[in-house]
Image (cartoon, rainbow over all chains, first blue to last red; front, side, top):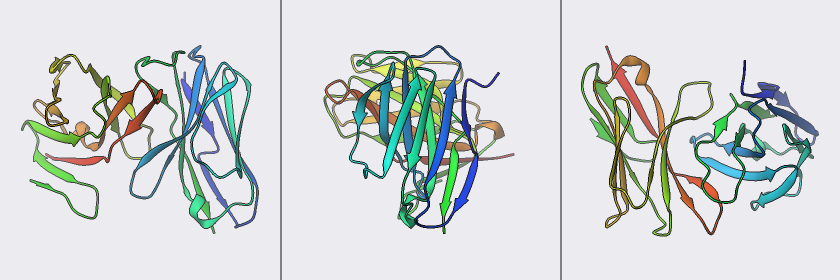
Length: 115
Length: 112
């Protein structure tokens, strides 16, 4: 059974379009994240939700809007896509808490290519 | 050997050798340090963590060393295998930030 699953795995789209990436975890975790990995493999946190509540919101353009319908799901919607949005987006989950809670469990990533 | 430049640092070793991957961290307030392994086409996977009040921790074939004086973290992999080939990331957790911050990765290539 996949612990953290993301869809789609690949997404190719034109500039200006709106797209969504979905994430689901079956680990029973309360905390979920979105990370962006650029072409140099640099991983940067974008958002974190704890039990559907936004707790971390990094300096991310407001074209990016996360939505957590329940604690097992965290989706990422991106409006007006730009070339610089091309990256691999990773969803992750962990045990709840604002302190260190141990390992993050990552999904396999969604590779977004904006043409 | 190891090289650092405009691209990701790389480390090439022969199967069976021991590997040492280094990481310099930035925040002296970090209280946990973690190593992740990312294989091609997959998400990062937790390897081992160490709390800031420790200087060494061992796992299965891996050892993490922490030197807070020089803000340096290393991951030692014993008897490296081709399956260890991946990008390795160090990460630090700063309580006041409440999040994990990842460092630059290192590409490990193990030659049979």
